[in-house]
Structures are given as structure tokens and as C-alpha cells.
Length: 307
Image (cartoon, rainbow, N blue to C red; front, side, top):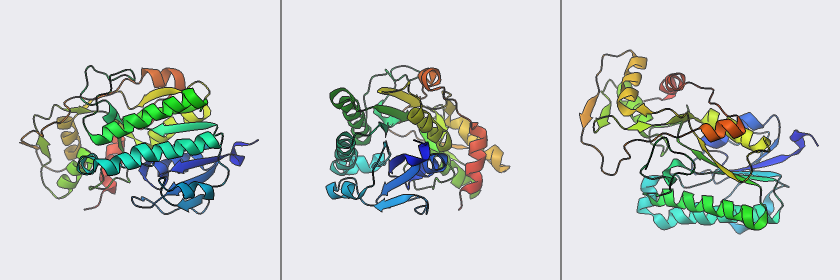
């Protein structure tokens, strides 16, 4: 059977990650997208099967065509919303994941890929963060994504569901907007500089983050999907490099060509000081390496954000 005859279901497939997954997989697979369009970043493509609906709706799964693989991206992704509405967060990220897993179990899905979040780790105990790092989430969002991880791995053990958990670190792409939950410091700095305002650094600017372009995340998913060496494992997906907030502000100013200097304001309570991941495992087992240098990706993002 050719790959094109096999069908991949992408839940939340109209989001930022879903867009790049569709782009990298459409030539090899039939694509099926399930999305409620609440956070859509692009219109449903004509060459994909699109079903508008919510993963919490039991009846929606009966409307799907025959599915071979599932990439589960659908989630409530705002940390702030998870704090304000923890029940809503749990319904979407825990119960929603469980419903997709049940569909996978009952339909003999060949491989299930779950997109988790670096928020599952909480405050780092050591650096770089490995896949074996303790999970101590500090938000309902981080906790709900961690519970999702545990359910996926439990289904692997109980029902022989071939699954892979991927943990993206700080993702970005030209599809980011300033108010996106994923956007964070990148789009805030770019937005300020484009308005000829200095980027505001909270604290001393020594905080570090690990940025990975969503196009590279999509590449990692494709490798996880097609390689037979990663089954029932957990992989960090990041650059493995720490970029400080201070360095980021200076890079944005440099890209803009403007004569600005960052300003320093009071540190944010509860902010994680340092965070970057070990990529040793994903390099060794999936042969994954990012293709987009951060400086190049940042220039692309700067040119796409409109004020």
C-alpha cells in the first residue's frame, strides 16, 4: 500500500502546528482534519477531509473516514485560561485526549502521536531538561498535559497502542500573533520595536528559553510517524540551546535596525528562570535535527508580524 492511500487524522489541525503538519504530510498521506475552528490559523484545505467539531463530542468520531494514524494536537493551550478556568482546561486536555485515545483503541490505529508541552516539567531541577526530568507542573495547563501523557503511555501498555509523546519547548512561526498563548516574549518584543518602543524585560533578562520553529516540530512529528525505532517513547523537541531574554531583545532590535535599548521592569512572580532541553535522545533515536537557525526564524517572524 502506498503512503498516499493511508490516512492521518490531525486533531486541532487548523492551528499553528496543524498547518505545518498538513504542509509536510499532504504529499505522502491523505489528510483528515478535525477542528472546532475556535483558534484556526488557516482555512480548511481543499485537498483534505475536514470535519468541524469538538473532540468532546462522542458523535463526531462516527463521522470520520477510516483512519490509519492520529496526531493529537487539539488542546486548550492558554496557561492563564487554565488558571482561571481549570475545569474547562481539564475537560479539553484530559477528557478530550481520553476520547481520542478511545477512538484510537477501538479502531486499531497504527500509531498515535501526542503533542505535550514543556509546561509539564515546571521549575527545572537540572539543565538541560531530559525526558526523565521530574514532572512538577505549576499550572493546571501543565498538569493537564502531563495527565494526557500518562494516559497515552498507559494505553500503550494496556491496549498495545503504538504511541509516541513529543514535548515541544517554545514554539514559534510566522503564524504567531501578539495575543496568541504561544506567542509570549517573541511577539511582545517584536510588536514593541515595530512601534518604535523599547522591549520591556521583566527582571534581569537572564531568563533562558529554548525556541524551536514549528516547521521543525512538524519534521520531528513526521520522523516519529515513519520511523520504527521510537514507539512508546517520550521525546523532547527543541533546539537544545538556551537563548536569554536579554539576548532576544538585542536580536530583535538588531533585526529592526532601529536605535533602541531594552528597558528593565520588575520581575514576574513565578516566572521560570532557566529552561532548555536535552535533544540527545531525539537525535540518537529519530535522527532529528532542527533545520532553521533561530536568528533566521526570528527575522521571518519579525517580517510577518503586523502592527
